[in-house]
Image 1 (cartoon, rainbow over the protein chains, first blue to last red):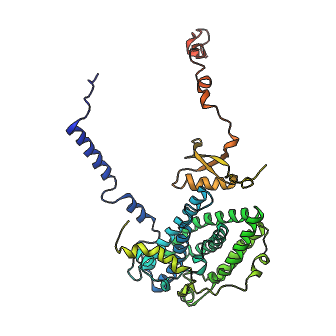
Image 2 (cartoon, each protein chain N blue to C red):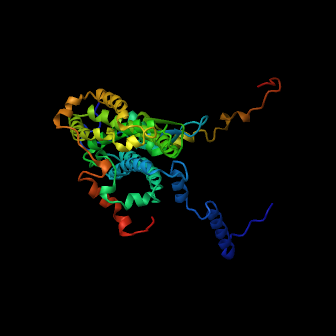
Image 3 (cartoon, one colour):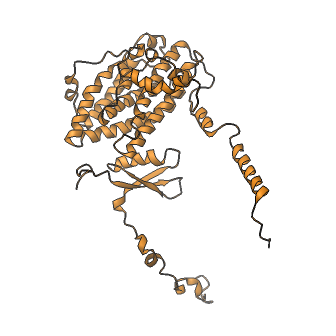
Length: 300
Length: 101
């Protein structure tokens, strides 16, 4: 039987601590856990370089995801329940991941990082559609905007996952699973608001009236899509798939387009793809970019 | 039955969450959450408890559907076998004539 060991004291204890710290440091070398995970999160083909047209296209989608993510982050601590804080926060984080991959890829054409693109562009250089910059409104507005965004993104990423551009295909293949969950979240809440109380249904209809006008911009073809023919899907080609899901959700919620479409003059002309934005984007960017611009080069 | 929101100040009902980490293991209680109904409880459980590849299956059940033992009655509930060694079969002599018992 071994004699009881004396307790580690003085120099012994220091040696034990040093050995422990060395072992802890060894696990990740000089790289912190955060850096390891962040590098692994970027999907796409390493060292791939985007053409100018593909970069412009990636910029559009990256800005959509970035701006919607920033909007959703507002809900954290403000959602109806803690569980909904988490759900909206998780969706925002997924979208931030999409934005990072897309902006990283877009930046390869001009040797800019995703941070350069997110924090050091001015309003007119952003390419997000108007839907994504709309204010959060009440919970129903956020849900309707999320529903439109998720149905559209699922159609888009499904088509894009077979792109001949390997980076766009890889980003889309990763995103499509996450977007399917976002869609489910929005559908579940749409049905509950529609079938809940009189007030929840009325608020949902108001949100639909305010938001449907931004749908058309998502499906508008322009010269960029002509130049990228065969590489990316034409926006107009996604409309039929979107309408099928959109109509089915509304039907299940027992809402007809006449309940909200007739209350507004017509669809918004948009213009986000060309840098013409609603009045809501500027304040959002000011808040999102203030830290990076006030402290250039800061890392956190 | 009253729905959530019918009574002022009332929140969503409480659910208990059980996650199965792997095939072959049993579901283990991981925590609780509030949700407006069963379907949303399952989705909230996914957001709150399985975001880091924890599981292959999730169960949720309304806390009100679970009947529990009273923690204050732990003594009466769980300690009753103490001093009753005859409950443990190992104190009996095995009969030599019954080899395959």
